[in-house]
Image (tube, rainbow, N blue to C red):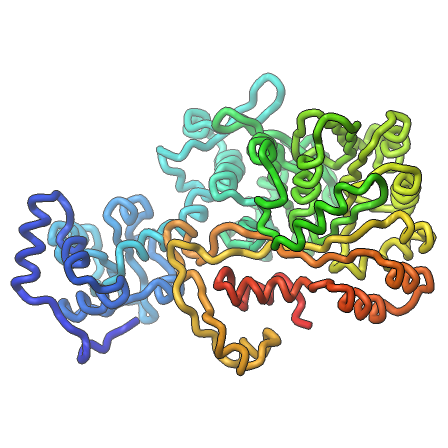
Length: 563
C-alpha cells in the first residue's frame, strides 16, 4: 500500500473537465479517459489518482495479501461494480474502488454497507484479476451463479451430465458441491482435483499448470464424508470400505463432449481423501491432430535428438519424469511425426489418453487380467513395427520391452525417474541384465514442464541476492540477466503464469557410456562421460528460460534440482 503523496503529480481541474466531457460523449468512464490522456503506466496513474483523493493506493501484489469480505459485499456485486470490500487488521472496513469519480457507486456503497468504512484505490484491471483468482473458490462452494453452466444428472449410460438446468434443480447440497467443483476445475483447465480431509472438514484444491491452488475450505466433518461417499457412488466403489485405498473412474459430459475422471481414494489421519485426475480426451484428440515436437516448447537440439531416436529402425526410446511432466504427450508427438501409414504401430496404455488415427491402441484392464505384461506379449504376435508401452512398472514388463527392442522392434516407453541417470538404476534394480539393457537402449529423455510468465502482465523483476545465490547463480552473472515475472492479471487469474513449456535433458548411449553401465560403474562417472558427450542437464534448460525472461527463479527452483 502506498500512502506517500508528497512527490506525486496530480491532475488539474482542466484535465478532469476535459476527461468528463469526452467520457460523456463516448459513454466511457472518466477514469479510463483520464488514464489514456495522462500517458502514465497503471501503477503510477493509480498512485496519482489516489493522492488526488487522499486515498491509499494498492498494487496487485498488495491486493493478493488481503482477504475479501464477500459476506459484506457478495462476489456477484463485486464483479458487477468492479469494487471490493475488505476487513482490515483492526476490523475496519475498506472499500476498494477503481473509479473515485463514480458518485453513484459511492452512494450505493453507503446504503449497502451498514458499518463505517474507508475508501482505497486500485487499478480496475487489478481488481478484475483479484476477483478472477477467487472465482473457482466461490463456484466450488454452493455460491453458484445462474450463468454458470454446471450441475449434474445422469444419462442412460451412467455419464454425469453437467448443465445449468440440472444443477439449478438439484436439491442435494452435496451433489451440487461435487458437480460444481468438477465443472469449475474443467473451466480452470485443472489437471487434478484434490479433496482433502482436514481436522475441521473439507479442503478443495486444483492443480493448474502443475501447481496446487487452494480453492476453498468448508468446516464440518460430515461434509467431507458425504462428499467422498458421493465420489465413491459415481465411481462404482465400495462406500462401506474406509480402511484401504480404492481406485475407480467415471465420466462427465459437458459442452457437448465427454471427460474421463480417474479417482483415487486414500485413507488419511483424519479420514479419507480423494484425488480426481481429469482426462479431457476430446480436447487432447483435437490437440494431437496436428501435434508435433515443435509445439511442445523444446529447444531445437532436443527436438533433433528425439527425432533421431524416433527414426531408428529398432531399439528402445525412454522418456522419464514425474507424473504430469508431459511424457505421454512427447511420445505421441514423436509417434505422430513418424506415422506415415507404412508401419504397424500398437500402443498399450493405462488409460488411453489420446486417440490417434491409424494406430491400434489397447487400454490396460487389470480387473480383467489385461496387464502391461500380458498385453505386451500379445502385441508381439500382431506383427508390429513400432510399440508404445505407456509405463514400465515391473520387472516382467521391463524384460519383455527390452527383448522386443532387441528383436527388431522400435519401442517407445516411459518410466518414473528423476533424471536420465536414475533410469539406469531403475532397470538394473528390476533385474534387467545391464548388457541387454544398453544393447536395446537408443537414448533417454528426461523432461519437466515449467510455467511461463503471463505475456499480458509481465514486467521487470528484481530478485534479492539470497534467492539468486540459492538458485546457484553467481551475483556477477546475475548482473547481466534481465529478470522478468508476471505480476498477476485477469488472463492468468492473478498467478503471473499462463501455460507451460517443456525442458529436457537427453542421454545418447555411445560406446563409452555403454561400457560404464555394463561394468556397473558409479553414476557419477556416467554423468561425467555424458557431459563430455554434450549432454545438457535439466537445470541448464531451466536457467536458460530465466535468462530469456520466460520464467522466474522461484518457478525453476520448484521444478528442477539446484545442483
